[in-house]
Length: 332
Image (cartoon, rainbow, N blue to C red; front, side, top):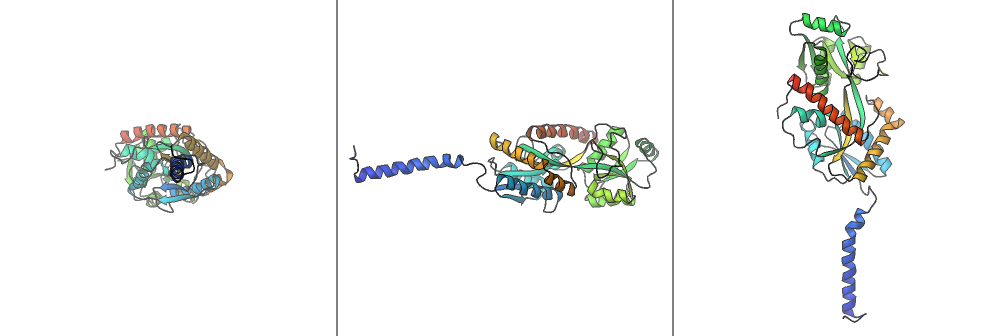
């Protein structure tokens, strides 16, 4: 035995203490209350886009409630695929989040044969935090005031009526494809490069129909340049109270929105996932957030983890039917 108090005894004791501290360090770090450092929020769209604006609003309020910095990182490219892949490959530790919308998580997985991520398996949905509901409009000179009259007009025109979109496979393309399938109307799709030229096309009469957000269309509706056909919302919009819902004009179960939500990489610990989801729902329900959401063109109450997951499955199932029936594809 090494004599107690000898130089050798002191040396072994010091080494033993150091070893114990080394082994305890990861456990102590793991035991730190979450969050213990800044959170990174990936946005797969450029600064200034609607997705980016809402992401920064959510990030600011999330940081305030968790008492930490939430840093927004724009990773742009390939219609949102680049940033989404970055988020999917990040550590599932609660410090890496993705602010996403319907394209990357419900539409592209159906439209493209190959994606560098699996929207269902690679992510944990935390909360849906907003919707931008769509409305269908017609050029003011279209001589039809009802769905029945539109159907008769489409039948009388060779090739049917035309509708614009911001691009092939986008939500304002699909809302008219759904309208087409639910009414049996013959419509011809004319894709444009973005929402602004697609809106100008219906205002000028290059096409007869378009489906877009109130931020794009409300002023033109008020000015009489275009006429609202129906609102793809469960209830009438407070911002276009005179425009009937699709259900009111005879097409039930026709609710379509561009939605926004927060995701984390798969494997996130349950405790952290629940805390983030509850915090995000609390943010989305607050009066301050709702006012800012409305100012940005959005509406709607948030959905937590379970409800958001069910919503995603329902959206994917609905749009898969529409896309396959229409034969819409996007090249890989």
